[in-house]
Image (cartoon, rainbow, N blue to C red; front, side):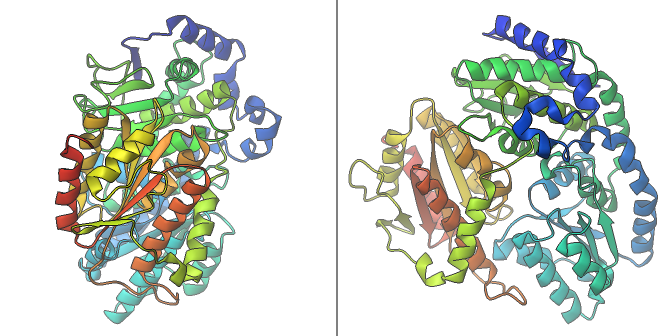
Length: 534
């Protein structure tokens, strides 16, 4: 089971009041009973088809015999390399599960040509690809499926025998997969939203095929479920919801996550989507900020606009410390997020602003000439775009970054969004800490388009106090998407420009830095951030 320790709380009286109200209204037990009325009449229709995650520790066990049989069949054929094509809820949980278990899983949640090419360069003779999409129409995942299907065929491998699908019943992907005779089609529970799907087929199928013990996850969640159903102020989900609700009421709308030795790898990335997409709407919500460790900028020096959470043992800078095994943590944070939705007065199961960026991206793909723009400035290997929000003329990256910080609201945040290869270009992540240290603003870092299926909802629907740095870059060898009129590089750029366009429509400042050379561009960016005026 999990434990939640309140290390320090500046709003202790209000925390107690919120917790008592949740218990008096029997919210935990009603949530366990899948009561859709908990979030008000406007949310009831959506909630009525989104609450099956509360019993997945029981219902998902029926998957286990099928998974055992499939893995045995694949291993008998010499197939033991697993690639996962999925976005958001279809990829974040499996990545945490397999990294924590120490088993290899190649996760494709990108449109960067080089990253996809690296996945293709693995041993195809030993490879099975799991194609996961709840809607069945996710553009990134569909592109990966098409690319791998052609690669298998070109290598003389029966492509259908190497493709496993996870989707919702009745989706276009189910129909197409069955018609194509793919190896196996797993149908997930349709009454579970993507970000709550860690213990559905979306989380369990790729993780088990990669070698993780998913039965243990279900056991951990089952043990935790007993506590989470209790109408008690000691219920850990009640504690989390009360602390976050009280903090938000006092202007602390950010939650800063640092791992302090939990043994869970990458948990913050999974919690980031759950919290941001569930709460970030109608101008309110909680913004997760995932940092490098308890000594990182944004955690050790957090201001009054943030609540710091240690995943693992408590540290001196933490407001909260949450400990427990992975399966239990999944269920705890799902409960806590649903409860805090009630506290904030929002529906934690919809995502009203996600589709806007997708529509803008599709429009740019249909009219690629529109995507071209003249740089506002050129500084070495970096082109700067979209500085109309600046209060003065900028000619360099350092000047543009300084100007962006100048227009950031008090207690706002900076979002760095890198549309690059998150494996080979991983060094770009160091920009988060460098920017946070020098600006004293909470700073998030997201890989595009991965973050569009995670924090993208919050950026458009949550508190409108963010400023945005997009990083795009030239690609080397591009990849065609079979049967589609665009390449991966064109799709990647369209996604960046489309999301930037929607942010601008919301009145948010967006600075796009395009790197003509990625390595030289990173050096230029770091140097610019470290200049005194940045």
